[in-house]
Each structure stands twice: as structure tokens, then as C-alpha cells.
Amino acid sequence: MKLKHVIIMAISAALIAAVLAIGAGKSVVVAKADLKWKDMGIPGVAAAPVSGDMEKGTSRFFLKYPAGFVTPKHHHTADHYVTVVSGTITLSVDGKNYKLGPGSYFALTGKMPHTAKVEGNEEAVFFIQADGPWDVVMEK
Image 1: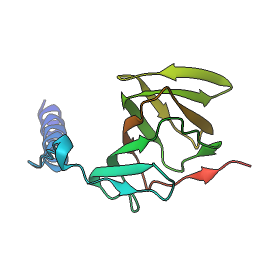
Image 2: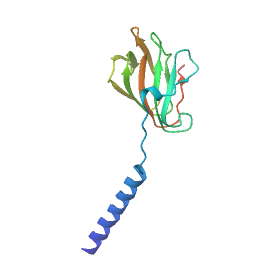
Image 3: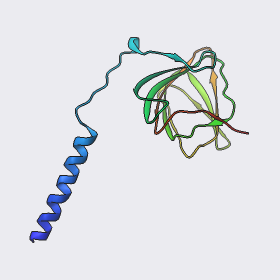
Image 4: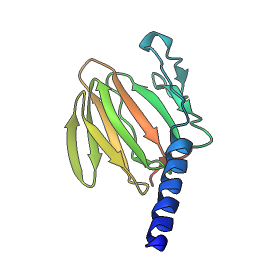
């Protein structure tokens, strides 16, 4: 019976340590008006980081595409998870086209090649969580 208690105590201590390490009392609050958009080197494409460092590791950021923008076929090294905040896009991935509007979600992992086209007259804004440095790698 004592071994069972030791194991339970060890597991409990490990879980408490993990919770403290993950949620060490940090919050991030950024109002829309306080987003700091930076040009991404393509006309009309901009990003507004909210946590982490897009160039060095895991990060969360907003990404904006102008109306009518079409990406060439590309992939990203980091797995990333995307929510469409505004606008509508057609995402082409795995040989299928998906028309996605506000509230839609997609995940692109394993360097999945894709294209995106902004539909209509409104820019598209996404919220992205990237599991590593953010890059754009063109497909051949």
C-alpha cells in the first residue's frame, strides 16, 4: 500500500509542477486598436504578433491578406493552426478547395503545400498559432 501512495504522490507532484510551469500567472491582452501591424514584404500582407517571436520560435499572430490576393503554392516549416477572423478565402490543400469565412478553422502540419485566394472585396484576417519559426517556402 505504501508503494501506491508514493506513486500517487510522485504523479501529483509532477502534475503540479507541469501546471505551474505552463500557467505561471502570465496573461496577454491586446485590444484590436493596439495591434502593431508589420509589413511582410509583399504588398498588402502584414502580421501583428501578440505573443512569442515569429522569427525564432512558437508564436501567435494575426495575418492580413488584401482583397483579391492569391498566394503561390507554398508550405511552412512549422505546424500551424489558423482561425479566419474576417473575410473569405478559398484554401486549396490536398487537391480540394475549401471556401472558408469568419470562424472557420484549419491546421496545416507536416509542411503541407497549399494556396489561398481572398474572395470578394474584403481583406482577410487570420489568427495563427505557429509551433516554430514562421517562414514561407515556395513549392516547385
